[in-house]
Length: 206
Image 1: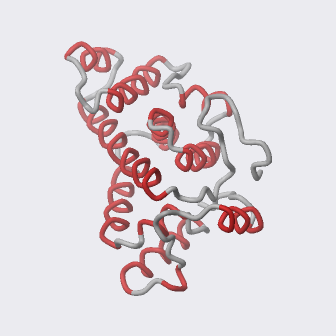
Image 2: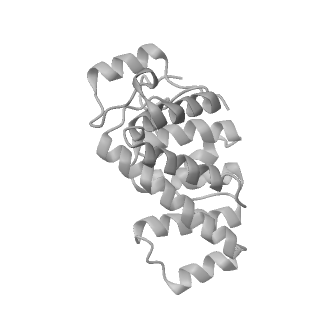
């Protein structure tokens, strides 16, 4: 998978005007496990996102993230719905970096601009997906304290136990990256989107 990201000139400008609060480790400066992991990300994606470079300060954290994400990619939820979940969670947590990243990646999985916008608002034209995204949003807002009725509703929408568990897992995975980016103030190296629904930042890279 090769991602379309902001141009080098745009990224360079942003890095001059806004610095991450946690150092984004360049692959060339990385050593040991961190270097191995970053090179693996580059080989797989064609880029090394600033999120990964930030996590590389703690190779155990980067490896844990990649392992968890990789395991879930082989689960019962398909790639498009996984991106929809990521968008729902990122919007609920107002994570600018993850909204930008998953808007780009979601488009690559086949999500339309309308589907991306709806996913951010925890909605879908598909009844089952709509229920799952709403459940994911409730998990974020309630910090996992969903009611019996809310759990029953997602089951009634057709979700198996495996699907429910994976929805919870994806929410947890995306909360981790959202929170990391909030703390690090990771420089966005994807075409930027506004955290407000239905808008794109003026002058953002295409």
